Amino acid sequence: MKEAQLHAASKVPVLITGETGTGKELFAKAIHHSSSRATQTFTPVNMSALNATLFEAEFYGHTKGAFTGATQDRQGYLEITAGGTLFLDEIGSLPFELQGKLLRVLQEGEYFKLGNSRPQGADVRFIAATNVELDKLQESGLFRKDLFYRLCGAWLDLPPLRERKEDIVVLVEAFLRD
Image (tube, rainbow, N blue to C red; front, side, top):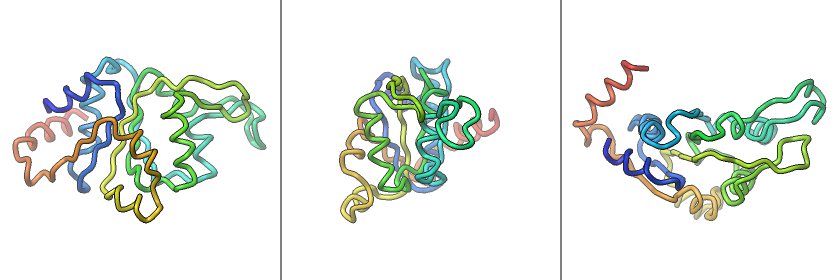
């Protein structure tokens, strides 16, 4: 996991690719726990579970009265994770229409909570993971090139575990701790 420490020293977003079951989330946690953000929150988000209706409320949060049923203020992932690491699992499944909203946060470092016209700063480190080939999704128009380049400050392609037998002990220890 020396590579995790190397990535932890940087502040750029990291894109982790690899087959299902290669330990992408564990590697993301290792980066987080080796970084200057280790004492802050690590928030994993399953991007395939988000739809257009939920995205803004889940990511940005909302103020009381922002929409029907918003009876109190609610923090979104960006606020909950302030100072920490936001892990975007299965980023390749994020619907195209939502990718621009995520891109804006990455580019500008700010967002608008629903019901609030003042921007809020987004102090999070982004680590994204996918088991699909994003370049093929880009070619077919399903994934934004500009989002790919923003997420890919550092790119790590994890080989399958069958090719990293030395990591088995590390992974078993991590599973036993959790």
